[in-house]
Amino acid sequence: MKKTLGQQKILILGIILIFLGVCIIPSNAETIDTQSKMTTESDWFYVGGTGLENYSRIQDAIDDASGGDTVFVYSGLYNESILLNKSITLLGEDQDTTLIIGSNESEIVHIDDTSAVFKRFTVDSQENEFINGIYISDSWAVHITETTVRSCEYGILITSSESLTISNNTLQNCSSGIIGVIVGNVTVSGNIIDGNGEGSGIEIQAAMFKNYIRRNSITNNTVGINLVFTLFTIIQENNLLQNQQQAFFTTSFFSKWQQNYWNTSRILPKIIPGQFGGMIIHKWIPFLNFDWKPAKAPYDIQG
Image 1 (cartoon, rainbow, N blue to C red):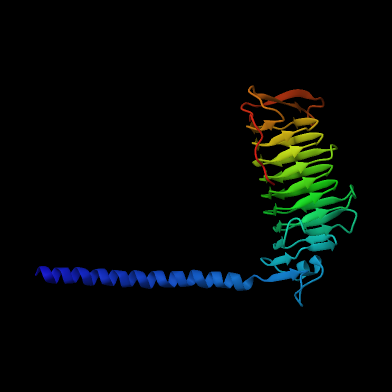
Image 2 (cartoon, helix red, strand yellow):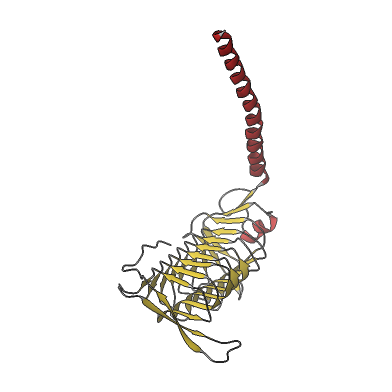
């Protein structure tokens, strides 16, 4: 009788395992099939290099691409201005050797009305200081990373956009580094901004939701970080070095300044000057924020 019960238990366990296997295998197969479809449905386009069918112009490859595709650009110098208006990945072979030189008088790269990834390029105005490097307008979920912008009026200018990530870039000798106007849920992190002493390193205007300015190195600007009519901005663990004024704010509320390095080692809290007014109130009233626990040493920020 005991043997029969043991056999029954083994039989029941076997049936359960078979049933689970039937359920699990189709599920895994479905996942693999979905991934396979995603891979086959996303195309890659190549610019430069030695391939016989490769494009010679970046814009031509963008025009032929569709949402979800990747345009890979080999190292070289590309003398053109780019309109990126599709949800694609634009990927350079190497940040230092894949150069885009602007060919118009407004901006070198324009990302408009889309979500996209722009990665591993150098954007250079060739000393035309009145041209903008990267202009992002009416977009969402754009990611700019591992890119160098040199000698532009605005390094990265953002208008009417949300849920953006600007990370691990290097901006050199631009009048203004990263400027966001009418933005929300923007993260600016890991960037090295070495200005030309004429504008703001990072400036956020008319911003709502939470915006994060974190772990950036900001040097040689008129104002390191400037907030204008913003709400809920987190400014954390940045290096502010050799700016004429390290930080300032105008009619900005619920900002949190946390553990930034203020050009020198500090024990006491850092006072951040600001002002209130400008719309209903037609005069400026001095206001203060505080970084209560400033960093005692600069952070190691690689860009």
